[in-house]
Every structure is written in structure tokens, then in C-alpha cells.
Image (cartoon, rainbow, N blue to C red; front, side, top):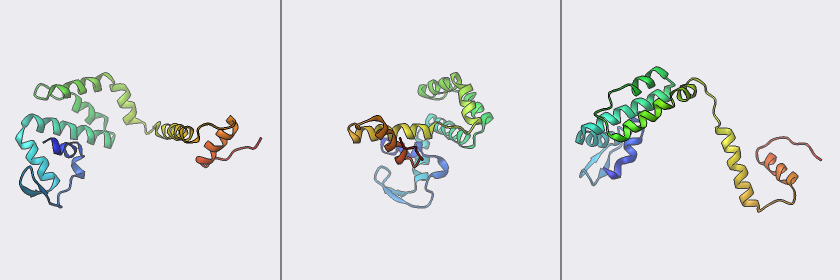
Length: 148
């Protein structure tokens, strides 16, 4: 099971249903979906946790607040302890998660810019003056700039 953890984290709709590959663990040619089915058949707790995980992924992907809240209100006594901890954390931050699902704003572009600036600083080993550094950042991101 340790070898197939990435398949359990993969979105169910993105699992391969057609291409069969040799799986030494099962001594058979199986698709990704068949591997997941066999893993889930071995442990009922894992199946329930997997279904909850897939429902949460679907709710976030579709930005469905009501489905996300339904996932949080499910019976957790049959799930492993790590799931209950995660669900408790989701409940604590529910207003923020609802905002993230409701609005399409993201700080991703800003984080990208910060990362590029840090990489530029690391590769450049310092500039003669700050103005040249600022120009290099502007050039890197295709922004127009003013001369001195």
C-alpha cells in the first residue's frame, strides 16, 4: 500500500481507467482505478476516508459551499484520528474557507512575484544600486518603467 499512496491522493476523475500496467504487489496487470479499488476493499475505514476526501476535493473544485459543509458534518467516529483532526481544523477556519470558495481572488500572482525577486537576488549577488535592481525586476516581469 505504501507504493500506491499517490493514487489514493489523486482525484478520482483523473484516475486512468484504460491503461493496464504490471503491478508486482498484486501480481497482475491493473489500471489505476482497479488498484485503488483493491486497496479500498482491504480496509473499510480507508474506503470511508477516501470517499470523504474525494467529496471534499470535488466541493473545493466546484466551489460548492453547501457540499463542503455537508462533508464536515458527516459522522467521524468510523474515520481514523487524522481525519477528525483535519475536519476539526476545517471547522475552525470555516468562515475563511467559505470566503475562499465564494471569491475567486488569489494571492498566487503576488507570491510568484516575491519568489522571482528572491531568485533574482540569489542569482545576482547584489546590485551596484537599488535602482538597477528595481529595473531588473521590471524587465523580468515585462513592466514598463521610467528612466532617471
